Amino acid sequence: MAGVPSLAEEIAACRLCAADFASTATSHEPRPVAWFRQGARILIAGQAPGARVHASGKPFTDPSGDRLRDWLELSEEEFYDRDRLAIVPMAFCFPGYDAKGSDLPPPRRCAETWRRRVLNSLPNLQVILLIGGYAQRWHLGAEAIRGGVTATVARWRDHTPGTFCLPHPSWRNSGWLRRNSWFEADLLPVVRAQVRAAMNHV
Image (tube, rainbow, N blue to C red):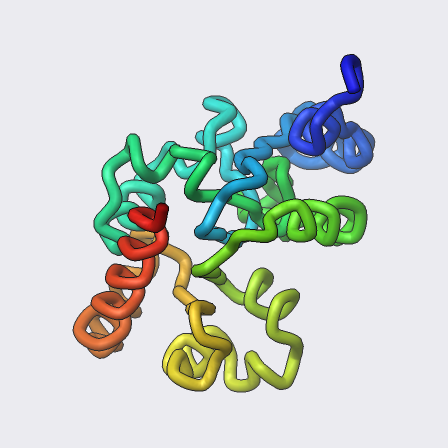
């Protein structure tokens, strides 16, 4: 129906957390970054946009995005193709920093308001990538993530087929990658193969 906004447009207009963001150290306005379309076959479920994404209005426009695209062996053009790949974090806005300059957690209000609606609008998902503890906890539940992110990622063979848990691709996790060489040697080849199959699916 003409004049009815899409779900992504509804999210882009959301201002539910405006007062919360105004009280952070960054004192910023909401800027939801909604990056999905109905036909997407791959879901990237992360934490929340950072300051660079807040500025650009486009997800993963930062060094973490560079590393994630390298992990998945996707070009920027492929990665940002919303008809094939949806990027749906636990919160659509940059939560801001606390007084010490640390990232604030994604507001629970965002997932409570939007997440079920978004996932219900993506009926064709073949591969789900859960990045970090917040997304893993929401999608898999407390029992499924026992032992924290490292243990959850390491149990990749136990999760629902097509669902993979990943650490955050932040460069601050370079030490983790060195200590857990199985991630790149064993898990990433499987993830890459399934992502490529989903990208190429007609």
